[in-house]
Image (cartoon, rainbow, N blue to C red; front, side):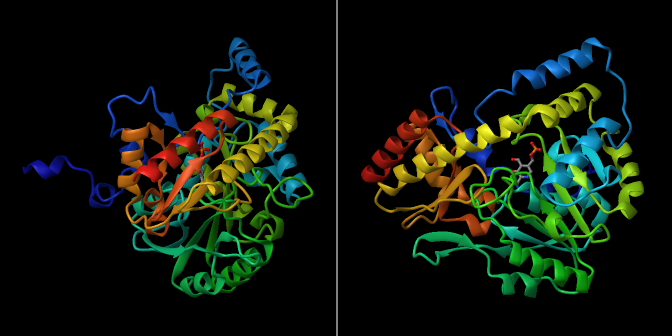
Amino acid sequence: MTRTDTLARPAIQSLRGSRIREVSQSVADTSDVLAFWFGEPDAVTPAFVREAAKRALDAGDTYYTSNYGIAPLREALARYTSALHQPIDAGRIAVTSAGVSALNLASQLLVSPGDRVVVVTPVWPNLVEIPKILGAEVVEAPLAFVAGPDGAAEWALDIEMLLDRLTPQTRMVVINSPNNPSGWTMPAWQQRLVLDHCRRLGIWILSDDVYERLYYGESRLGCAPAFLDIADDQDRLLSVNSFSKNWLMTGWRLGWLTAPAAIMNDLGKLLEYNTSCAPGFVQRAGLAALDSGDAVVRDTVARFRAARDRLFAGLQTIPGVTANLPPGGMYLFFRVEGLDDSLSLCKRLVREVKLGLAPGSAFGDAGEGAIRWCFASDGERLDEGVRRLADFLRAA
Ligand SMILES: Cc1ncc(COP(=O)(O)O)c(C=O)c1O
C-alpha cells in the first residue's frame, strides 16, 4: 500500500483553505490585533434567549427531536417567513444546524458529480466550495465594481451575463443577497428574470438569505428583496437562513431551510444522516428569539447602519481607497488603487500595524483588488482601524 492511501479523495484535497485564516494565522499572537476579519456580530446573544436555553436544559430537554425540528419552532418560522414574504406552510421548513449545514444539505439534495453549478461571486467561500465536495463543476458569474447611476462606485451584476451562464445543462444557481463580502443586493427585477429563466430551463435556485434582515435600503418590513417574495410552492427554490446574524447567535449553530413540499421527505432522510436534528435546547432558544426578538433585529440593524456610515466616511478620507455604501450585510468591500495581491497586503497590515482585515481574494478571483472590513463593531474601534490603514498606506 502506498502512503497516498491515507489521503482524502481528490475533490476534498483540492478544496481551498480559508485565506482569512491564512492571514490571521500569519502572526503568532493576535491578542493585540484590531481585528475586523471575521464576520461576526459584536455583541453577546441577548439574555432572554440564553435564559430560554437554560430553562430547557433544566427541564431536561436533552433528547433527539424530529429530524425537521420541533413543531413549535417550525410553526414560528413559518409565521416569521410568511410575514416577511408570502404565506409558507410549516411543512416546507426544516430546522438545521445553522446556515452552513443548510447549505450542505441543499447541495447534497441536488448536486451529482459533474453537475454544473453557477455561483454569483465574489462570495463567502463556502458557497463555492460546498458544491465541489459533491464533485460539481462550479462556474462563477462575477459582480463588477462600477460607477453607479449617481457616479458613485457600486457592486453590480450584469444580468445578461448571468442568464447566459445559466445554460440548459445547469443544475443549480447559487445567489447570496445581500452578499458577503460586497453587500450587493439583488434587485427584485433581477430576481424575477432569474426565476423566469430558471423555470423555463428547470434550474434550481439556492438562495442564501442569511443577511436579508441586515438591509439598509427602502423596505416596508426591514427585509431585502428575496426569491421567497415571488416564487410559488412548486418552484425549484431552496432558501437558506440562519439565527446567527439576526439574533446574535453565531455560536449556537441554528438555521433553517425552506424547500418545496415535494422534496421534504428526501430532505428528512438527509437530515437523519447528517446531524439527525439540531439540539432541542438550542431550538428552544431559537423559538424565544423568534417570539420576542424583533427589537433585537431592529437595534442590530440601527447599530450596523451607523457603523457602516462611520466606516464609509472614514475610508473616504484615505487617498487611493474607493469604497461604496453597501445596501445590505455587515461588510464594506473597498478597493485600493494598484492593489493586485490582497492576501499579501492583509498579511502586511496585520504584521506592521496590527490591523486585521480579510483579503478580497478569499472570496474568489472576482474579489482580488478589494479588502473586506466587517463593520459590526463600535465606532471608536472603527476610527482607530481607519487611522492605522491610512498611516500604513501613506507610508507604503
Ligand atoms: C453568506 C453566508 N451564508 C451563510 C453563512 C452561515 O452562517 P451560519 O452557519 O453561522 O448560520 C454565513 C456566515 O458568515 C455567510 O456569510
